[in-house]
Amino acid sequence: MKIPSLAQLKKELSYLNEKELIDLVTDLSKFSRDNKSYLFFKLNEKDNPTLYLEMVQEELEADFQVSRGDHSYYAKKAAQKLRRKMNKLLKLSKIKTDQIEVLLFFCEKLKEYGFLRHRNQVLDNIYQMQLGKAVKLISGLHEDLQFDYEGRIDDLTG
Image 1 (spheres, rainbow, N blue to C red):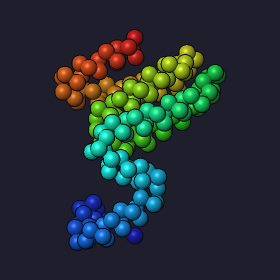
Image 2 (cartoon, one colour):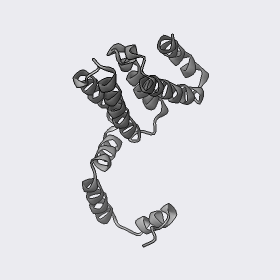
Image 3 (cartoon, rainbow, N blue to C red):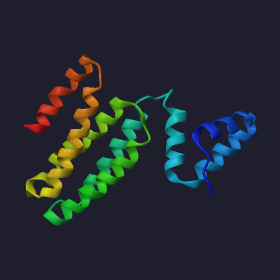
């Protein structure tokens, strides 16, 4: 079976009435937790624009608190698991500043919870990759916003 292009899907969706669209979106949200999360954030971001950021940081903080960082092996596995979860959550927002905040939060927590003290190459690479992603996103922002993030980047690299 050949999956139609996005343009074809948009065209077909334009023929549906409001009730059919609501039913379709509801069915789509039942297929995965990601779809449901995305729909929740999109519906609520107008009322509370920081909702996404707060929920993601709260969820990651809780996971950092229960993760084991006492041994290099466990710290590596926990960091990989947290990175996968963070990347999944990053897909839910297209707002660059929110993505930057989540990436910097992740890097700060890796340092705070002592994951980097093991001098493990995998942990160092995870840290550097996420920091690199944040720097790349920051470079695309307005100069005033770039300046605001420079201090946090300096703290993380120094």
